[in-house]
Image (cartoon, rainbow, N blue to C red):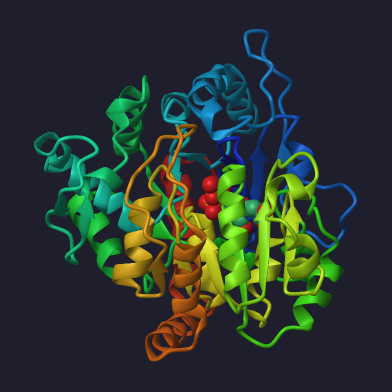
Length: 477
Ligand code: UDP
């Protein structure tokens, strides 16, 4: 801490979806322990999940919850489903006046806002508050998207085609199928949003990324030199949650008693359990849950399966006898709703993670030293999969080759494909062992970089020093 960092104040404004709020709150938690005041801006509907009043051992910064401006919409706390995202992104822009009012009242030294909120740039610039863009994805995926865009790759290959291509001018040889690429031009209004994100990001003060230099050094360099952004790599931000309460009260109330979950894990051998979770929003169709259940039944590995929003009796969506014969005999645990993900991933019994490749989940898997079975669904998840499988070599793909838009019907992956992919990570062959060793190494590296002397710790310090310098230069001290 320096003598002046005590007066520094940073405002954090996450996009209102769990996959964005959770890492932004973790990011905000990095600053008070460095002597910097942090405030999280959110709507009243989201404040309780960020700042649970009942929990004393949490170190979350306070929330600012402005009462809505007359023109503001009454927003639901979060999008009802991935399908509602485009409309929600549009609606949230009507919070512009409230954001401006808070910024004027607090006049922080910097504001960190989500990349999906490009309009915050103009408001911040008008008040001469530097805006930092928070990117909740990998540097690899940012570089890969830039490459696809810059070289207009999608224009020369027909949409949906199985034709493969090499992503131009990236540090590694990355091959993808056209059918795996998220084509924003196919979603109404999305091209406009993506263009605005880019333009306003160029005008921003810089980028804060939830990654660490040693995890993707080539892409940290590439992002700076080729994409041309200043970036502070401050992750893995989830590692700021040190005690059990912080790990279990992250994002939402858990749908399982955490001690029950830990007791169940305690009965399993180290590295034997596979954890299956598809993030905070994606809802598995019943036909897919059944196939996952069949794959898990056929596999030797014990499992924790997280499912969301399933209604009716379990027998309506699980194969016959599964509840009694598989779950009942202690081979599996099903969490219906919200799981204490980082608590589970960091238990020594967990040895594999079936993930949809949302960046938070990928990085949480990496930080826990757990190899992954990758099953991307939408957005930039197919790019994250390439980082995990081809660059870091800590995962195997379940074999999904088609990007399917949110809400559209997708191919049901058969139980046998799932069993095979899980087996290749859990069955202890030479390749699996090598993957496990690399995963442990990355986790160890991740733990070191956030401690004093580590690169992410240093990047947080550099950002703070820079804001102090800016304050002196503008004479606001
Ligand atoms: N998460 C959790 N419990 C759940 C589901 C998700 O704690 O049952 C957390 C997970 O740890 C991660 C975030 O929610 O931090 C999901 O973010 P990610 O980028 O992986 O996926 P998204 O939800 O944005 O699709």
